[in-house]
Image (tube, rainbow, N blue to C red; front, top):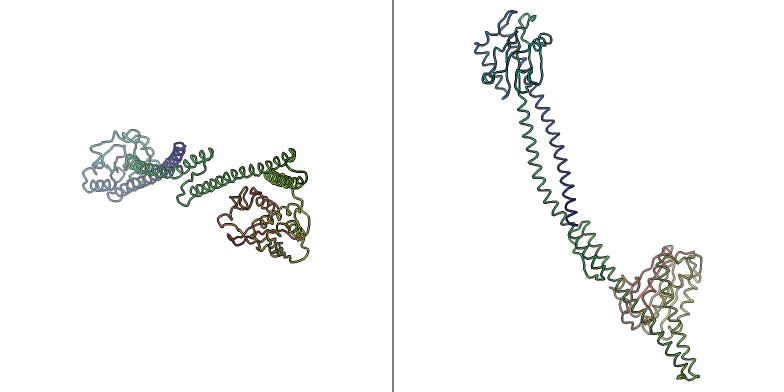
Length: 480
């Protein structure tokens, strides 16, 4: 996986850089070529024109003037020389009216042109008084030149006594273009190298946690949830690693709860069935006298009810997880439901001598909800409150109207819930009484079912507690 991702990163980055520098080289090269061409074109135009004008104005040639006389003119030769020195590759040629070369800059003496002007050039000069192009001038040059030719007029202006050509080689433009492209290529190679290093460390930064997650996922698949991913930095990869660790913690807690649930269910199924089987065998064998059989039948009945409660909770859990449990919303008196539940715990309350307090803002407070579901929720909470209350402690139920919601609160003094257990009390199979010293019948589903019911009503349920002091469960309902 690492190689594949690294290859993808490198390919994409290199392709982007290659295309970017290619476009950059094309744009810069084109602009430089155009600007250099225009600059050279302007130089040759002005050079040829200025020489032609200078000859006409200074030497005032008549219609029969022979430009050959300029060969031995030192001042004119120096002018041509200095003008040619203005640009390193500028060439200046003076032709007579017959197209014969009579004078040029010093450079051309060692690189003489390959002939005289063609009749085509002479006819063009006679017609338009100038000519320009970018070629070999019909074979005069061995390479391509940018040139401009200007006709030299007599003083009368009616006759051409010759022509001046200023030329510039294309080699200079090519050298500049090649040098620019080489510079861009060299810069791109350094950028390629820097990108390769950056992508390597970047991909390593991203891929390393992914590899750790892959190994951890394989470990989780085998049932081992103790591996965690190191969280480094504060970016998306770190957030993913943190979320992965949270998922692992959740899976580990769920696995622990599942194991605890299976152990508890096995115990809760085995104990009553063993008790029932033992009592029935004793009655059948006659080991229990007839006058005591009623007492043992009551015990059998109690164990059967215990099994019934367990099976009912398991069925509720199955229906909730499958989404098959439907709720019927109708108005009913929540105060009356709470009173009936409190009365159903009368015997247990008396056994612990609890100080019961029941408060309602009004005698009748109607809510809109599923009556059976809310009864089950409140019953589970009240059952836990009685079960975990200390003897003689306060046991209080408050039903109040505030913030346009009816709040149902169940308070007891006793065991309480440790602070570290509070975030998990509504999870499936979770039991704070892991030793089963007080909770001998529960399997950790009552509060999970209660929260699922309240959530389905679109309401809230929460808990406040202090270990060995008190515990308060509270949930809201919509008033009718």
